[in-house]
Length: 482
Length: 150
Image 1: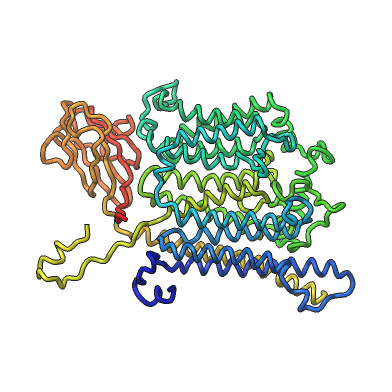
Image 2 (image 1 turned 180 degrees about the vertical axis):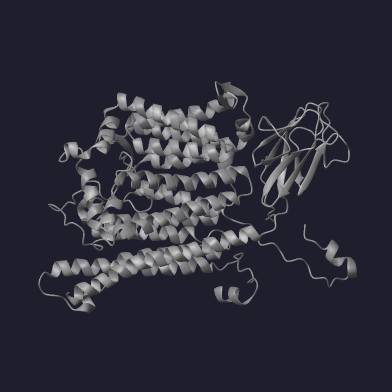
């Protein structure tokens, strides 16, 4: 079937399926496969050499992937997703799947390298992460193939917003406390972090709301001193929605999510209105709000104080930040090599939340500056692709949705990367696609699946009909396809 | 140096190298995409949407597809006719030069405004800007990309 596609201009429909080759995607996936395989070999060799002690094993046993089953399953899943997209035959983006596949693969290597008892109840850290990754890849493929109409997102924006707020309220009432923050909700056997899902819902709501009210927002009828604001009544629902989301998040002590929501909201407002004054007001509000939170909440005060001087309490509250800084320092430019980082202390890594909050520190140690820059580069690629999809979108709603979805990933990666590097106060949030954790992986997979679906460029434009027609000269003029 | 350790280092560096091979290929795809997008001929250069029009012509909410040169005024020979007591016969011209839009006031009696400030001679305008001629307010918008209907 695929061979026929290469030979003919368009293969005959087979049970209604019109496959369409995706050469770029396959090429990029091949590089991803090679990279992850080589990384797995490097990890396996390092681990085996360390385990062998004095006696050096033979090169044949030494240079093999760390865990062949995990590697093969993951790469196979990516290939199946690619084949599904080929079969769907849509003209969609071909870069997002390989880029996300690479990030997921790097995360998987990191989980294989960490002590398996750290988390996960499906046979260790790496295997649990693999299961979540497989579900994530399935979500990406399913959304990219199936989502053709955006009306179900566009029309019910207030319903989505209400569902999101309900989810948060449920977490607040019934949630479990982890590290002083009430983040996870347990429904039957499943636990999840609703704030991860809420970020997708927030973007959908904002896209629906902003695309409808854009003309009103650009109109500057209200004046407050030197500032010109849009008519206030039209601003109210949006501000209320945001205040509710932020308020609940703050009450739940989930500062990373609060920061993410607010930054994405500001960026989207700028994307829609192109008014710098709004961003200035937003940043001012952010700083004022931060100051108020600093006074009111001990958590915020602690985080800022740790950020300003982690060495004040090096063995206590500043411990993990300092350990992360040391990890980056040990890594240097080329890193110590996968699996060759600082040995675990008493069966646990030196940083407690290494697999969820500090994966970049671990990667910084083992892959060095060069590796971290490459990972940040892949995030940049994701943002660029999302904004390109937004620029080519056919209407405002799709444009704002695509921009918002890609900015969520970008801003989240920035918040946690900068937190790990002590550039900004640390807030507990996951590094998209690399961190361990089901909720985060699933929510981000939904984002990427929607982005690929939004990038659909529609059917190919048919070539103009040939001049040779029954009605002679007037043929080419009249024969234009509608 | 121990040859085994050396070999492991080669594999490690190969991994880092492959990360950059991936980035390089992606960037090549992105650059090619951007180039082809820049080459694609746009079917329209921009749109002018009517925000307020006390005279009723042009009607509020209507949108004009813009050519490279669009003249606006009360005279019927203008590309966009503005029925407003405060508009001049030949009021202003909107032109697309190079890759940017410019608004030129054609010595109108009551002036032409961009985002509330009066235009003296030629002024650059961007998508999203608000133009005012007499009592009529218009907004310059991005062109709609013409897509085949599925």
